[in-house]
Image (cartoon, rainbow, N blue to C red; front, side, top):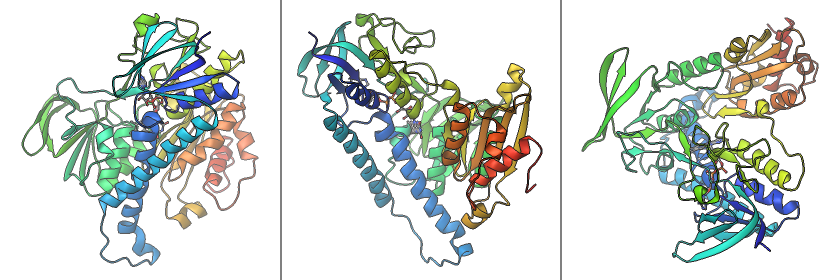
Length: 465
Ligand code: FAD
């Protein structure tokens, strides 16, 4: 008999959720984690600390820029970065401790150390002290996540050339920061340090920022961030980099012209790669896809049927909620249940100010697929709640099938887009129509009324236009 029925490797939002679901389904379950704390990238160095920094820096910026309009007089406003970072660390500790509590509550055994397959049924776990322990399991769920991608000519040094892991913990505000990559992580952390006082330049290779988001949303976000003082260079390629005494100099080229950009620090946010280094996938016989992700079928089984894989190491967007949903589905598949994930209804969010949130198809994708669609748009400017909140930027765009009115995509730019998108995800999940949103009562005064107004606009009946 094997030691465990289910052994999960990696305790990020994919792994720890999979372990809980497996335990709920009655399996004797264990989880292996190489780091000191549970929670993976998301809780330790990703989603959560970055959002804590975004919130604090947004308050600071609002106090500086908008307090006087609200009749609030705050003299000698200044930043205590150490306290700001301490608050962020406190949230991380609380949440990683919470995962530990959940493991105990669900009677999931925690194995501390680095997991490595010896064969397809056996994993060797090597602790920080070098002690090794062999464990066997009937089923494995691989959830070992991802790590930041380096520029080949400018390696991370943890000080001047950094990844997001260091950029959530600078102990002083850099005078200047170059951000390579105009995706979610680069724009979010660029916003944080800009609001705290750094001069920030974002360099993006593509002609646009926020790849994957609707083009109109991305362009409006770019203009908004530029207004906030972020310098954004699109169509610009970083060709070389050099670390000097006073910082880093990048050689960039755009439209055939080369130029040098210097800054105290460079944040490289050009993407993340799946992490299965040292896991011994070859020993287990687990195959990879052409793009070097772990290959799975619709049941989350790898090429070895009793080994499952989820989260950032498999295809799809590298998002925490996608990893968690796959974790639940994989555990349910092991139990013989029809666990699945609807990949057409996974929201994506950039937590800048304003936030960009999106679900379903973008307008560009519908055009490319030749789908006939209708569009409805509404802006937040005249909305009572947006005015009361002093957050009037942005708009909602709903894309619906031209014939059936079925909602195909919803794209929101506003201060609370990450929250508003949830209702749109539900509508898409249930196969709802724009008219369903238009006929649903929304509380007044709320930002959600703008979503309804956009739904009215799909059929040309906007009330406040
Ligand atoms: P991970 O969270 O990466 O966890 C993998 C775990 O496996 C790690 O703890 C690792 O130590 C462990 N591990 C690896 N190999 C072994 C081994 N051999 N033995 C034992 N343990 C091992 N996503 C969102 O959805 N929303 C956001 O707002 C968001 N913000 C982000 C901000 C930043 C700065 C970053 C970096 C990422 C952000 N992400 C966000 C992405 C999100 O963090 C990842 O998509 C998510 O964490 C992936 O979950 P996972 O379970 O697949 O892997």
